[in-house]
Length: 273
Image (cartoon, rainbow, N blue to C red; front, side, top):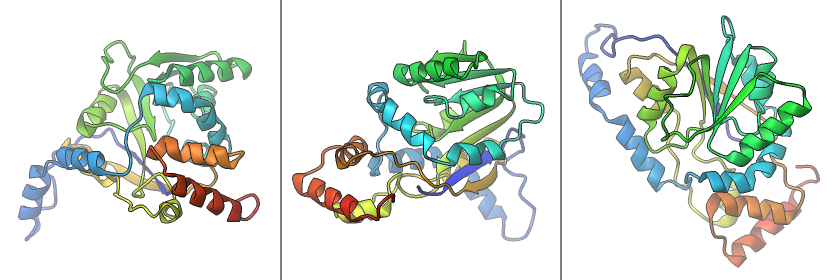
């Protein structure tokens, strides 16, 4: 799995509060004039990664939930969260609850938001099975009206920032946070291994990275704290068919020759890889 970025920030500072040193005046002007949101949108639309619909995620929900159980991502992220003074959490893109459920054991209330009805169904079933009763679920997309979504001490968005308007999404997070926000985004150019692209013989058109979010937050007057999570695991394919289907779900159509190469690649991997 590629490295993951963690950053949080609720404090506000004026974008022009750079040190008044000789030679930095042009840099201040540049950072405030560049439309990072437009650059993000342009690169996202051109990249190898494309956003998926709620129906797409519904079909992928069970496989995604199984994959979460094989990764140490949730444990690492939970270890980075500052829960001092936090009684309520808004978990955006909560999925099947890999973060919402453990967080619910540590705070008074978790508001779990996702645009996939199937993901929310899996979350509620898992919460019932584990005796967790302080999670409320909301079916919403980023573009929906959030006026009835409660504000929370901590607003968390974990690998769910597949949006066209990054500035609007960051503003939405900030507006719903009483204390702080936490957002994780992939730091690499793609969700998939570069080795997979080599096998497919396809070029990687990089998706926009975390630095766009950092720069947009800076323009909003928010100085983000940045950290990186290096995680392992996350693959949950029981067969070559599942492996190929998972890549088809991410990349779209695969040619017969691409499928053949992928199956050969998977078969050649060491057992348990």
